[in-house]
Image (cartoon, rainbow, N blue to C red):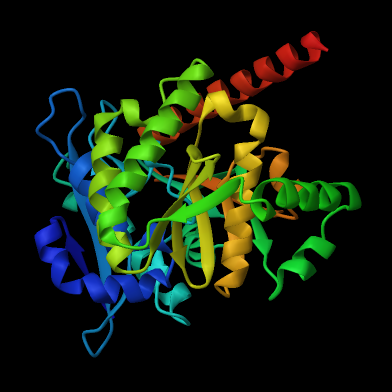
Length: 379
């Protein structure tokens, strides 16, 4: 196998379909999501952003087929270049990974680790080489990332792994009644009551953006509901960020054409009360973002749109419904189980980089101790 380092989207575009095959139907890993992310978050024309450069090591086999790639970028900092994952940051992409063909995970990880160890001068931002690699939004059981971390550890790197907030997933049965039977008795009774009161009576209706023409209306509703809800809680809301707003508006029609995105909204008494943006791939529905009318809270619109989304996913034959990151208690009520996520920080065997890592680790431990002490004091 051989490795090629790409640093522009134009170079990578001919491999978009091969990239998507490696993504294994996880939309967050796909070409459309990540290339559009780079368009909005990798732009160097803004003076307020540290310099960023696309950095994608790609692995080709003996037949010149793409069998693996690392969807990364390198960001210049005062302490040297930092490698980070495309899709990270405020977009909150989950299930990110080192991409690999099935059965090639270990060999792809090995050759990428070797490249990182032997080709440090490839980083034009700083010829001293990379100062750390940050892998975030990674499933705890993700094998390619684990192989990469272990391979770099064997080459003398320090690997720091820590748990973060969980993703939560429901394994869906083939039938709605079977799903209901798996809920706790009290919650099952509540679900049936809500279904009778709102859906069976026609008081609540789920509207879906089935066509591109419906998408602009659905997105406008989502943005309005999301912003009003977050602002009612004293938060700015995601769409206060022009980059995030631009990213969602551009990527959504592209994903919808590929069958990887759907948007629906709940009307109660003819008025929009909630909206949900979902990604879809490999039989899994990913509940990415919700907007709720703060004036409709008494109707429980969040719970209603979750129920409608799960029931629709079962009706469409999906195998799983994923609430994504966040340890909110309501997810367990819907019979979702935690899927642990991790952040992995990898530091090369260089004195300056190791010293900075030790200082960071000390600061993190102090911060964790302080938070723990504050929680104890408040009890």
